[in-house]
Amino acid sequence: MFVLLAAPVPVAAQSARPAAQVAPQAPAPAGQTQPQAPQQANAITQVAAQQGMSSCIDRVQQVSNFLGFSANTGAMFMTPPAQPNQRIIPLLMEVPTDTGGAYVSASFAPNQVNGCGATYDAVVYWPLACDAVATRQFPTLPKLGIMKKDIAVLDGGQAIKVFLMPAGTGCVSIKKEVVF
Image (tube, rainbow, N blue to C red; front, side, top):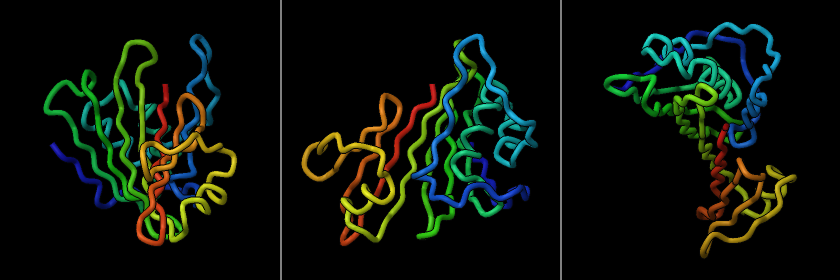
């Protein structure tokens, strides 16, 4: 079942940086809690709760906020037909950026270790050559190499990779992050 968030509940604006530059924080080590200021659930989190996704509520809030959720974000859940706390939950977002928009695909996986794992891909077109995108948008990530022929890989460690793919005179960045 698709659940479209066509008119999100207005919330305070989040980061104006493109989604490709924003990364969710890693969860606190086992046995420790990460201090966080109380937050009102954003519209994406509210829909997740309405759809019965209680195992991933905190992770949905964390990831959607870090990926730039705002009142101008379009979002859609692809909710499972049954047992949402035992199945993968895809979330698709269109996040406004300074250069247009980013397509973000996040997936939440309920588990028994830390409640919910997540991963996302943030896809952004840049009207620059890929070398310039690497230097300007991801200056702290070293180049790992070329995947096969055309796609450069930047290394952000075990949980983050950025793929830079030539697209006409510009470049498409795909940031992949896993939140363990």
